[in-house]
Length: 257
Image 1 (cartoon, rainbow, N blue to C red):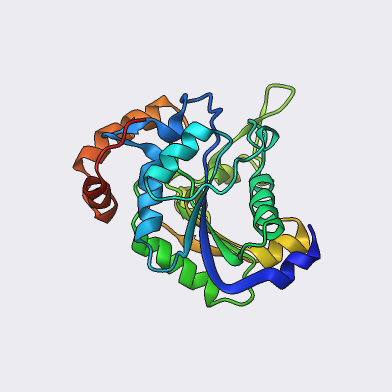
Image 2 (cartoon, rainbow, N blue to C red):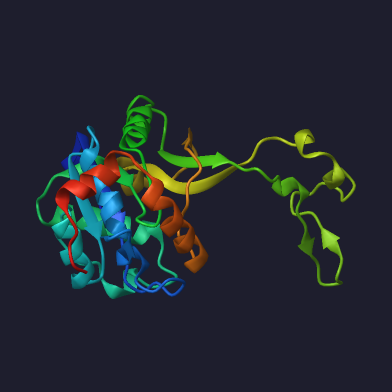
């Protein structure tokens, strides 16, 4: 990336970026699918709006329809993401690079911190988002922060299938070692998309988004929508779920999709 961007970074600014491409196949239009009366993306915009640390909320989408919905719930959509950066195999680096370059090329403030909030994980507590932001601001050695929760099943006990039809461990331990009790293995954490925080300066210098010094941020276990079963689980949970995000949406009212 262009190193001149480094001169335009505001070290104090924190922007949220919510990626919402329109081409989902597992659950059609999942990012705007109605969940208890609101588009799913609205929950993430609400959590970012309630944050005490986020200065600006940007939705990166390839769809004008998605952009309109995002604006109705309080986000900004200063650009549309190119279709080639919103494909099934597109990476997080691509939409981050696009957002940073767009701000720089249009003479706008480029923040040092990006709070990456995936709309597929809608039931967040904004105070946990703010704790994550503070954690990376307080750690000058950190390249990034990612949230994860403790796995209840150890992958040290899992198998791969080799070409001969035999099981092998993918950790390199023997099959007999893999048969030890779960308590014999170290804790393993599952990244969950609850909240990630990225540094523009690291991205620009390295053409990477996470780096080696990633803060391990413990988050509560939550539902991240990957298929229709996940969405059905959310439909069961949300009517019983009461927090500031849900109340914020109730105050704003339902919008047509």
